[in-house]
Length: 353
Ligand SMILES: *Cc1c(COP(=O)(O)O)cnc(C)c1O
Image (cartoon, rainbow, N blue to C red; front, side, top):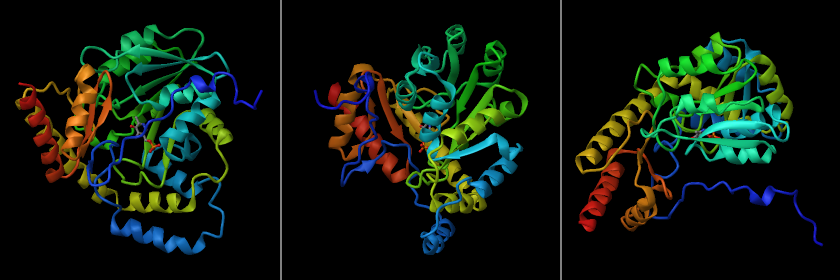
């Protein structure tokens, strides 16, 4: 018999990234439409001359900056190659084979993959009718085998967020030995003041962690850097399962330069948020159901028409992300690109009449 990978690995789904189609507008990966700021690009270029040296293995400067910003000791921070890598580290650090990880479905596709690679069981709890995490059902899904509960807030791909009162009530119910991870990849696009900042929970509760990334609001998706903030013993465990040197020097430098330019980057987010609200209003006007969005994308719960819709926009040179048979996720971009998408969405409606 030929050599084979371990039993069960072939049963796990592959990670499917948003498509890139040459000549078409890409609204399929929740990236920011603008490149790095000139100051960030300059810092990266300046650092190129030192690439014969290994990166700082403990990512110490960036970790201290992030700790200071979060109002936490640096030992509660662990930097990784984006929150996707941190998610994998987390499952490896938290779960023994056969342990349970609870998360909502549909949610970020990394969760079932990272859970399965760590030989843990994914416990998927359906979203509620408003396409939001059903926190009561998630609390009820916790058993003595549960090690981690992931709450993606706002949720990818449905864009909806859970509010403070319901999160408070949920956290009160979770046993103290179960880690609740709030994946806040889109935190900077949240405009509803009732959606809490997860770092407030990290500061006040011993079993809550937050994942943040430089890939979205900070525009560094290509460099791969994100961080975990949570209980210090878990941050230490993440550092233990970290692949040495994997957060590269340019990523460390660029993340720090982006923190220096934070005001400029957050101003860009405000523009995206205004566009998001405009696009959503126009889609509702055109007859679509569009859940409230707290992210840089919107969700069209088109059910089994998801794929057909995405083929229609593609024919109009706009790439969106279909999650057959649930819906379509559309990233918010510059006004001209959003208008091309809106045009395609309207023509889809009129073709079907
Ligand atoms: C985009 C995204 C991330 C960020 O991934 P990186 O690995 O940091 O690029 C994390 N979580 C969710 C839910 C996302 O949508």
